Length: 260
Image (cartoon, rainbow, N blue to C red; front, side, top):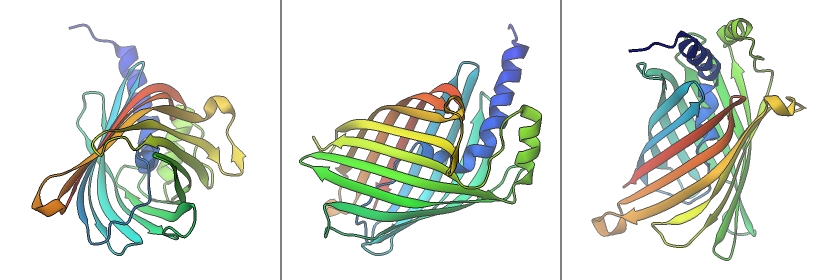
């Protein structure tokens, strides 16, 4: 078997760059939307991977969610990270809360998204994420636009890693976005386009070549699986082209929810 030490080194470098960003990776691949899910419990499985020229980084997540009221959805989940063919490692435990501020009284729906997470890697520390979630519909076409602010706390190990790799360390409050256009065609098949990105500090954006922007086609669907319509499966697939952590990559994401 031929070995490629240079490729291995580059993949390890990619892992070092991606690992500190794992706490924010989930909302870089999965759109946050506004729905009334009062009384519903869900088992939520998510998976994304990013294929670089020198290897692959993948991350599965598993969580439990609940619609506390018609306005409030909460979820706790655990995230792992896997580099190349190596073993996966748990990198964070997170608690997400989405609260609907409007419910039909305006032409759009508005919610507040928040998330706090505890890192389990060498850097440790905590991260926080918050921001508005906007959703509206024109005919059978749904539009989503979200802006999230992110900040890490107590992760001094990231600065040391950044110094070793030449990566610019996170500074203050970072700004990210999510966009989606989706067509309500069939309950089990709703195609659309998604876009995600990170631009750097909210009031001091990175140079364009260091920003990350990716977009591509997506498919959403849901089906009842019995119990008088009280059990349901929701799924979402997306394939994105662009930059991930500042490097060219092609990314795939999958989300499957069992609702009961």
